Image 1: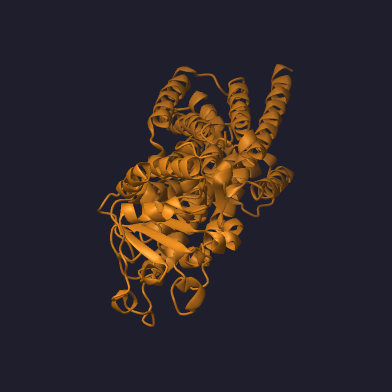
Image 2: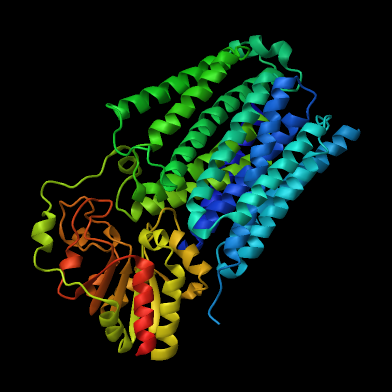
Length: 93
Length: 488
C-alpha cells in the first residue's frame, strides 16, 4: 500500500507545482506551451521502451513497438516544432 | 549488486529529468528564456530515455531501436514541414499520438501480465480485492491493472477526440456540428459508465483481455461523441482539454509501471492543459460543461440581422482607409481566425511597419484569449511575421486605452468584438469579455460579408456610427491599404 501512497503523493505535489508555474506563463506563449508540454507528456516513451525491449511474447512486443513509434513522433516533433515557434518570438529591433 | 546500483542510477537520472522538465516549463514564463526552457525539457527527455536503456528488463533492442528511428524521422518531418497556420492541426495530432502511445503501453502491460513475473498471483491476487493475504506483489499487480485500464480509457478518448478535432480544424466536411444524434448527452454518460464498468471487470478479471479491448473500443467511441458536437470557435477549449488528457494518460501510465518521472511529467502537463482550459472558458464567460455539452444558438430575444444592419452599414475602400490612417497617431489591429484563414499576417506586418516608418504612428495588436483555434494562435502567426512580442497586447491590458485609439482595424474577428456582450444580458455571449473596439474613434472591420460569427448573432458594431465596413478578403484588403498609403 505504501508504494501507491508514495506515487499518489508525487502525483498531487507535481500538479501543485504545475499550477504554480503555468499560471505565470503569458498568453503570448500559450501555443508553444501546449506543443512543448505535449512533447513532455511523450515521456510515455520510457514505458514504451521498456515494453518494446522486454523479452515478452510477440503481441505485447508489437504493441511496444507501436508505442515507441508514436511516443517518439510526439517527443521529437513536439520539441522541434516548439523550438521553431519560440525562435520566432523576438523583441523590437 | 549490479542491479541495485543500476536502480539507483536510473532513479537518480529520472529525478534529474523531472527537475529539467520543471525548469523547462519555468523557462516558458518569458519569451526571452523560452527557447532555453524548451531545450531543457528536451534534455530532460534525453536523460530519461537514455538511462531507461540501462533498465535490466530491456534485453531486445532491434524492435525498440526501429521504433525510435522511424518515430524520430516522422516527428522531425512533421515539425519542420508544418506551416504556422497549420499549428492547431499539428498540436491536435501530437496530442492524439501521446494518447495512443499510452494505450499501447497499457496494452503491452496487460498482455505481458506485468512483466515482473506476477502471472502466478495474477488472477487470485486481483480477485481478492479486499482479500486476507494480499502480498506486496499482488497489490503492485492490481495497481498496475487499475492504472492500465485508466490509461487506456483516457488514452482512447484523447486519441479519437484529437483526430476528430484535427478533422474539424483541417476543414474536413463530413464532421457534423451540434447534436448529431439524439440524446447525445445520455449516450456520452452511458458510454462513460460502460467504460468504468469495463475497467472494473478488467481489474477483477485481469487475464481476460476482452474487457481491456472493450475499454479501448468504448473510450475511442466516447472520444468521437464528445468532440464531434463542439463547433469551430470552441476549439481552443477542446485542444487545451485534450492536451490535459494526454498528460493525465501519461501520468496513469506512470502508475502502471510505477515510474516517478512519468507521473511528474504527466501531471505537469495535465495541470497545464487544465489551466489553459479554464482560461479559455473564462474568456468566453462559459463553463466547461456549457462548452462541452450545450449547443450555442441565437436566442429568440436577440434582434434580427435586418433590424440591426438595415440602412446603417457604411462600406469603405482601401483608398478611404488609407486617408484615415495617414493622419492617425494611434492604430490598433485586432486579429481573429479570419486572419489565419486568409494568411494575412505578412500583409498585416507590412501595413504596421509602413504606418510606423512613414507616418510616425504607433501600432499595437490587441489579442483576445480565444481568437483563433487554439490558445495563443494569433501570437504565433504574428511572431512568424516578425512582429515583436511587446506589440502583442492582452485584452485587459489594452482595453483601458481603446478610447485614445484613432483607428482600430478588425480583421476576421466577430464575436470577440461584439458590444452586445456588454449590453444585452439575454444574448448568448452576455458577459463574455470583449475587446472594446467600439470605443475607438474610427473602427474598420475587414470581413467578407455581414454573416454572423460562431455565436450566430448580428453584431451592432458593424452598424455603429464610427464603423466602416471593408468587405473582402483580409489579405487583399491589407494590400490595397498598403498600395494606397505608398502613393500618399
